[in-house]
Image 1: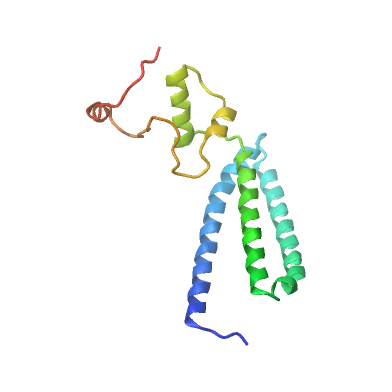
Image 2 (image 1 turned 180 degrees about the horizontal axis):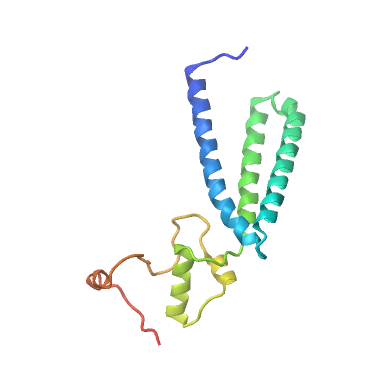
Length: 167
């Protein structure tokens, strides 16, 4: 019988919140990645393939969990070691997968890198160069310039922001 405690309720509530946040962030990025992969206006085909691959990976995960559950439940240390190992591998593989993408649209980080290259070297970098230099973690800044979207020129003049002369 399962003993229901107040801390157990809080734990289940916290895990539900975390699962929802993962679902939201996954759904937001999934659309961009599908659009990136649909090179020939075949977004429906890409979506169907993605869905079938997700179902297959979930099935494989379910079968492996049934096979491994008896091994890891014998020891609390083994349970935590396997959890931490699998979580770190999950993060590593997601990082590797995301760093392979060459997104051709601009976000604030890619825009900043593009403008810095133009101002400093008078060149326009390729999407491959920009994507390779883009910080992976949001908020990590690279470069010397701060792009302020929606600012008026008079406000920037008051702040004495250095400007570049375009030819």
